[in-house]
Amino acid sequence: MNERLLNRKSKERTVMNTTNETPAGISPAVGKTIAFALAGVSLLFLGTLVQPRFKSSKIVPEGQRVLFPELADASKAASLEMISYDDALATLHPFKVMQSDGVWVLPAHEKYPADAKDQLAAAATELVDLEALDMVSQSPGDHETFGVIEPDPEKLKPGMTGIGELVEIRDSAGTKLARLIVGKEDKRQGGASPAGGKKLRFVRKAGQDPVYRVEIDTSKFTKKFSDWIEKDLLKISPWDVRTIVLDDYSLGATESMGRMRVEQTRKSLIELAYNDKDSAWSLEKMQIFIKDKPQEEKLGENEELASTKLNDLRNALGDLKIIDVARKPAGLSADLKADESFTGDPEALSSLKSRGFLPLKSGDILSTDGETIIGMKDGVEYVLRFGTSTTVSGEADKASSENQKSDSIETQGRYLLVMSRFNESLLVKPTLDPVPDAPTESAPPADTESDKPDATKAPGAAKVTIPRYVLARLADDPSAADDEAPDASDEKAADAKSAEKKPDADEAEVKAQAAREEKRRVERENRRKQDEYDEKIKNAQKRVRELNGRFADWYYVVSDKEYEKIHLTRDSVIQKKAKVEPAGEADGTAPALPAPK
Image 1 (cartoon, rainbow, N blue to C red):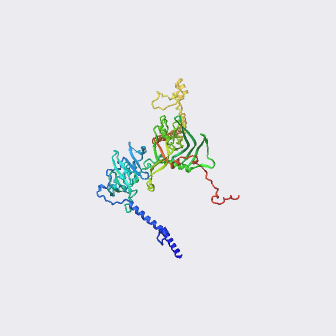
Image 2 (image 1 turned 90 degrees about the vertical axis):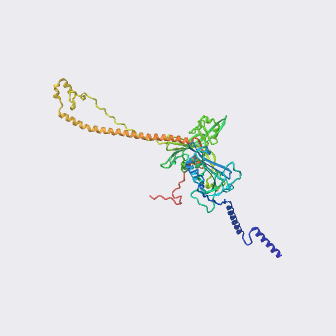
Image 3 (image 1 turned 60 degrees about the horizontal axis):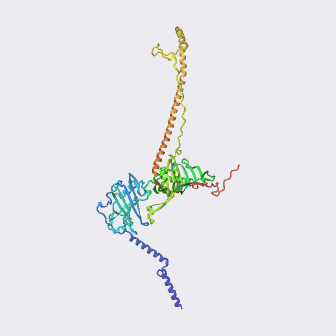
């Protein structure tokens, strides 16, 4: 009986050891550790096998080191095309920038203007004098291994791997200056350490079999839309914002008898002003609409403006970025007015409606999600109208794409219509000084008989004033002239009296002259102020024309993140005042008592 019991226990121990898959005497924990270690070594070995294996072949002839001797001058590049392959989605992603009629455009985005001169020069420079460090293979069978299969839609088959990115540069005549297929990165230990953003990559010239290893910065071949356009849409400084109007409304459309009827439902209208000297916002006007009837509102005693959100809005406008564009149909004017031919075009109306914009009977184009109006110091007013949401596909950042399966990303955005207009009330009118009245100049006394020249007197003789009664007597009795001749003492007295009056006359003339000069000075200063103001009006009107020339043809798309900053409602800009706790309550101490009288 005891032998049978011992045999049974021995068998149980054997079964336990077999179940734990560990040798006798080794604990299960140690067995798991050994298993993990073996798995790690196996993965390392597998990774080594997967890495491209090659035997470098040095290129001795100097002329063979430069891959594209035809591309000696980056300024000759007139177009750049890049085609990449998304393994996860099994789709090709082409991107091209080119010159058209002297303007850089993006053909894939309906020829939207590109800010491409510097960007293209940087990409072309990366291929100028590009030298091969060594040749790693001459066999077409190795192209998949090094990831340099050309992304040609006619040659690709489902399930293919090892597809590279094609970079092609042409000159203004369409001549191909460079066609490079960029493959995998060489991550072998002991390799060279390229400087800057350069990395070791396997490449080959399109149409040729040899595979080379080069140092290249592939970030210069970006396919992100935002990297090739003018990033700042409005081109404004946040500090120049004077007013903001938040017009919150919605639109609805119904069709009847083949005609579309648009109804606007108003929610609120808020007008705000910003004082850059005090860095403070003020509420100028606030209305809410009940059954489309406006009712004036003011801030409550426990309410205040949400300055943080308003500042975020102002700063977002100064750096408003777009993530995509679409061309608007013909017939819309620069000030977003629809003419009769436009409203009668079903295709044009469908283009607007699908993006959240509808025309009113007046011809104005309104949006389904309201608008924001920004007034600037220079008299230019921007009108931003918000349409429906959309999804934009684009290239992921290089850093993030390495951690995800797909090279493309999808971003949620919002359609946007933009226009500008001149608003003279935004300009500070000059204060003209009152023009003083000029002094009235007294007329000279009328000529008398005694002032007339006497032909009997010799030229240069002293002028003598003879009273009229003396002249009358002389006419009756000329001999009385000697008796009535003025006494020398009388003449002296008259001269003394005249000398007394002369200083008073001179002083009056000086004052009159000073008054006339002051009047002319005020007139000149007022004219200068008015000319400066008129020049501001001309500049603002010119800028409006330039801006609308840029905005007129496009629907813009901004990300939801940007949209949430610039589209604010009443609930967003009005907040409860923070409670101010009496002194002593916050830190738990009692408030100080007043001193006894």
